[in-house]
Each structure stands twice: as structure tokens, then as C-alpha cells.
Length: 405
Image 1: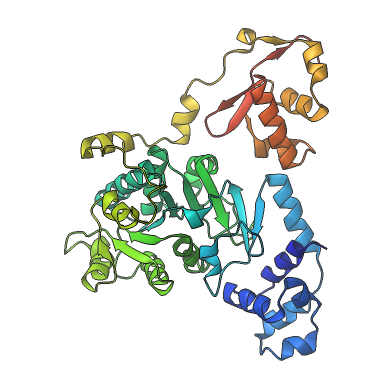
Image 2: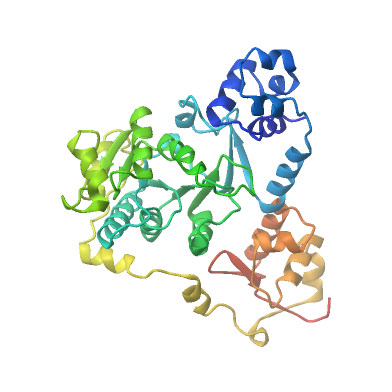
């Protein structure tokens, strides 16, 4: 059995936390050795009763379901044993053993990756600052790392996307669980411009206790973490303190002395735990000498220009209102000979998209074709001009047929 199966088994034990999973892997050397260990070996470790009982459960049906779901939904898996796994995360004692990925994860070890966190209930000032700073970072080729909560997280990700940059969103639940639901369009755009990642298998619900644990990954992937707006008791401060513990830089945007949402950020600055930040350049200047080949410095935008870019808040209604596909009668015709030259899976995908607008996941769900081969078929059909890509990573046929299927 592949090593990844044993890693999934280990990380899905009942009651296991990331530090315990990483500790067990270090103790046994491999997840396979941990799997084949017996009760007496587990007893030596003084484990919690729930975890001890779960380690004695050697059934692998759950592992097979996880792998099948990942294949069906196009979710890739990156383990701590893989060469592509970020060295920055390996530095953590409680590094995730597996990352589930949707999209394309940048090789962050060579990137100026900046975490951005803050309050869900942010003020217009905080939202504007998060968007403008993230746009500055993205325009200079930095990678923005955040969660996907409403408020500062969403504002930072939107700003980075408006700046044409790459983003990484670290989720507390599975990468197939869109939370909050109002960020569905943002979830789809991030897959195109970066990656959605999680240490939890698909289908995991984002229970509240998972968010503080998730925060160490945001800071761990980053060179530094910017707190834009946070009250004195805020989850964003957990990420800031994770960053300090990990030896990362911490930055904070100041706010009015009497503003509740700036209490935490002002406190970080006053204690000397964070550097005061007013623009993206304040952060970029810290790393320009270390990463001269990575960063670019286009002419800065004025406040008015930045606000103009950030003003459109593209939502689902707006996207669907955009003109997408000409009527069927206006489409060019594909001959039966051209259809015959296509592979069976390519034909099936093309027929399915005739008059329909579907994502790759929709196609996987409506066919028996694995996700990887669906993506291959879409790429080939699009390159040949038979498909058109629409907003939201949806596809539709760009041709009509001269015969019935």
C-alpha cells in the first residue's frame, strides 16, 4: 500500500491533533510503522484513551473513501515526505502531515509570501487598507496568504486578485467545503489564481475549534504576517503570536486610539511585537534585498486609483449577468469527421457541455470520468476551439453538431 494511505490513516485517527500526529510520525519513523504497531507499543506513549483506541482500529475503508473523493474532485495531496512540500512548514514541530490542495500551490519557499489576517467584523477603514495593501503586494509579485472569512480575509484576497497576483487560502474545513457560502465566487477565483489548501480531508466541516489550529499554517507558509484590524481579543492575534513563535516577522496597521477594532493591532505595535505598516511598500522594503529576482516595483497607484480598482465587488449575480455564450444558431458547426477524431472521453465531455455551462467538478459528478482526465479533456477541447471558458471556471460548447448523438 502506498505511503500516503498510511499518512491519511494516521491523520484521521479520532482525537488526534497535528502536534500528536507529527510526534507519532517522528517516533515511529514512518506512518506505515505507526499503523503496524501494536497495543503494547502505543501503551508506552501515554496517549489519551480516545486516540489510543482509534490507533488500534486498522480498517482502511475511510482512507479509500478519501482517496476516491480526491480523485473525483481533482484534489491533489502533498505530504511532508514529498520534495515539493514547503520547507517553511517542515520547520514547525506541528507541521501538517498532508496538505489537500485545489488549484496550483506556488513553491512558497522561494516566494515573498505574506500572511494577511484580521477581524471578520471589520470597519470600512480596515477593509480599504487590507484591499490596498494586498493589491500593492500582488502587483509586486508577492504571494498573499489568508483564510477565507468575511471581513479582512476576503478584502485581502480580493485586493490581491485585483492586483493580478497569486493567492493561497488556508481553510479550516475541507477544500471542497465553501465557507462562508457567500464567498463561493472568491473560492472559484482562488483556484484559478493560486490554491485552496487544508490539512483536513474533503468533507470536513469548519467547526470553530479548527480555526485557531489552522492559523499556524497561514503564518508558517509566510515570511511575515500582517494584522490589518483586530480587537484586543481576536483570533487574528493568535496568528500573530503563532508567527512570533515561529520566528516570522509581524506587521500591523495602526488605527484610531479609541477604535475597538484597532485595539489589538495598536497593542502589537506599542509592545514592539509588530512593525507599523501604512502601505504595501513598508512590507516589501523588508524583503527587496533578500529577493531581488522575485519582486518587481511597478509605479505605485494613487489612493484614488487603488480604490477605483477595488470598488467593484464582483458577486455571483454580476458574473452571471455578463454576456457569456452566443446562441446555438450562431455557433460554428463541427462535422461528424471531426467528432470521430476525438477520444471517447472528449466526445462525452463535449456533448455534455452542448447548451450547458458546467465546472470541471460538475462534469466529474455527471460522468464516470476521473477528475484528472476531465481536466485533460477540457484542456484539449479548449485548445482546439471546441469549448469556451466562462467566468467562474465554467465551460460550455463553442460549436454545434451536424448530427444527433
